[in-house]
Image 1: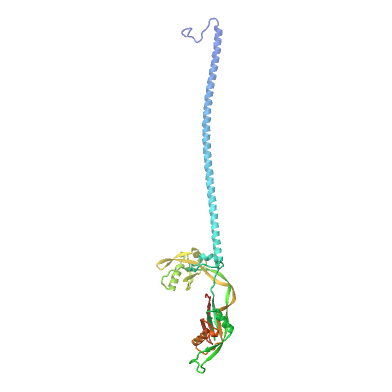
Image 2: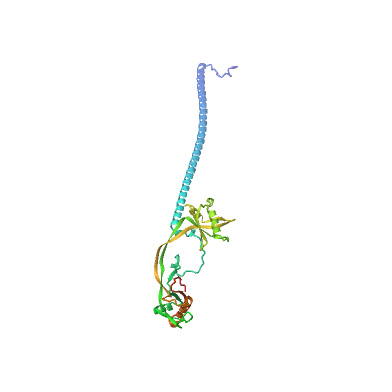
Length: 371
């Protein structure tokens, strides 16, 4: 200290010891306060440091939590995607099983119910003849009768244009037919023969039940091209094609050409060959140097399961019996027609006449009368 005024502690003459103690106490208090302030400062800095660390730790925990949540979300989405794929695969398998069952059911219905097989049968060209008058006639199987009627020797069948003429001839029962004279009758210039007229009774089907059976080894090939080759050559080419496994075929046991329809029946030696070909419906067949699209259909065979017949009388036809063999076949036919065409004899216009001489037999064919 350079001077008393510049001294930090100034001693007062009157109270120097007392003042000094006060100053010392004050310095101690100031020192304690400074120490407390320093401690508070350090504590504050420590608190701020702890706050910063807690904040950083919170931010880190928040990031970790977000990452965990994100990871959990990805896992959940991945689990959902996996579950969806599993469900999709399960549904696809169930669909395939149902599809297989449906195909099996279709095959079972197709083979057991021939009505369901109509779409698989060969196509038939039809001609439209007009609308049906009676709705009850729709969707019915219409049969056209073709009756074979045996004729004994010494008989004749006469069909008149009008049914009333035939009925009149039948009611007269016996008829004296006058024969013309000629070289064949040397002894008599004129002679007559007695014949009997009876109605013609035939049996017509009133109910018919046909059982259809599908061959497990045969197919029906239709829509065949017109190649201008003989039947045997066509059969050879078809057998050659359908005998190869790459074409879906196998060894052919037999083949048959159907003249009435121009179709071919092929029968294989093994089972399980015909069905896949039939399911295709159509197939490209290599015949010669060209390919032709043909139709493959089931080969059906029909057996009559039930047939009910009822007698029916031909309204315009008369059967003549007891005709002697005294003229040639042509002369006797002319004599009968001349006689029964005369109105004076109870006859009328003759539409057709068939004569079988004695000692022989014949067969007359009756068709549906559309007159």
